[in-house]
Amino acid sequence: MALTEANKRQQCTVITIDGPAGAGKSTVAKELAKRLGFAYLDTGAMYRALTLKALRQKINLENEKQLVDLAHQTLINITTDDKKSLKVVLDAEDVTEPIRSLEVTQSTFYVARIAGVREVMVQRQREIGTKNNIVIEGRDTGTVVFPHATRKFYLDADSKERAQRRIKELKEKGKQVDELTIARDLEERDTKDITRAVGPLKKAEDAIFIDSTGLSIGQVVGKMLEYI
Ligand code: DC
Image (cartoon, rainbow, N blue to C red):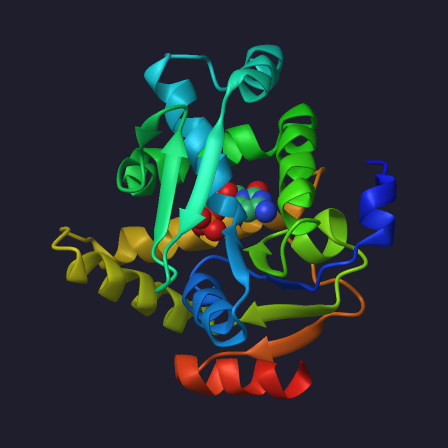
């Protein structure tokens, strides 16, 4: 995917955080953005919002052309308040909650694996990142979206701990969870993200690897701040 002149010149400070589901990217990225006074962008929320729209319109998730057309026709606006609480607006509707449903979580892979969809999303992510100092997190933010980012991190954690974190998060939201299903789901999603042809989950060569197993959010953010 060609970089625009603006990306090559990239005047804003861009910090990327990539890694698998449950590594703690969102929590850490929000906290880091808060401490630095930067904007925060959750790229996964963009793929989730588009997937929600596709599911509602009953689009066949194997139909690449329809999904690419849908991406072009869809407005996704992601904002955060002072506390970095995320608000995701799909066209004119607040979808912050519905994009976290199990159905959306399990279906997003089908939408996110399409090259044409990723092209639209990556372009929008670059536009946001060239206007603001930003902490951006996802799977390909350091490899594809901002290969010239100021600082790149790859955040990982032991798979058992990642599953436990996800289970705790769901329980806190009052959702019923089957622990084995959550662990298996997480593993399946990782494999799919790592092995897909476009924008796979991958550590950029110049990214700093941080293993968050056994570390608190504060400790991970502290490590990152030292590097920054
Ligand atoms: O980070 P998350 O779990 O909210 O991501 C949701 C999905 O979107 C997940 O299947 C991976 C995918 N994704 C992606 O393909 N590229 C990104 N930059 C971010 C997320």
